Image (cartoon, rainbow, N blue to C red):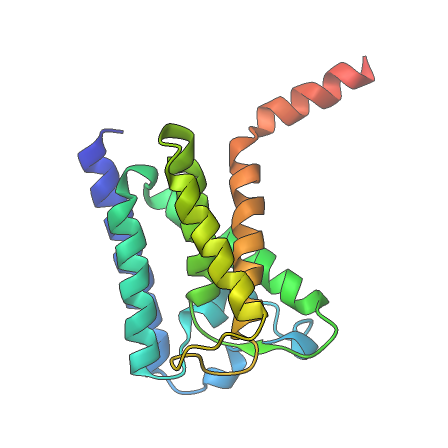
Length: 194
């Protein structure tokens, strides 16, 4: 796939996510789509739907602008499949981590997935241009500061720092899983059995 096709495909995937999120935001009955760690067994779909739902249109606009920015800056890393795979893996892994937290966590919004997606992109970029490591360190520092109590005015809810941290961890796991080819894992197991 050439760079122009990648840009178009990644941009199309981001536009589709934005459109789906706008439709979900517009529809009534948001409670059934929101993530609640205590109710996850009854609402497993919320792992994927909660990031698409937002507290209001300002929250939605802020997150969608973030998605467009990440896809625009790192457009050479995305085609449609890659963006959807990243979205699904990061949202499911981060939701699973939040489910493991001992207290009940409720959330809606894309910011956790955006933190994970940004980390995946930055790790890939660092492999080509090592100076991106400074950006990873700054992003990690931001999340650590949030966990330590730094709360910007735009934060809504007590669990935003945990959501961002879970997204970052999920992004690291997603990057690792995408770098490891399934065929390599199968061949390794086959060699060990012989």
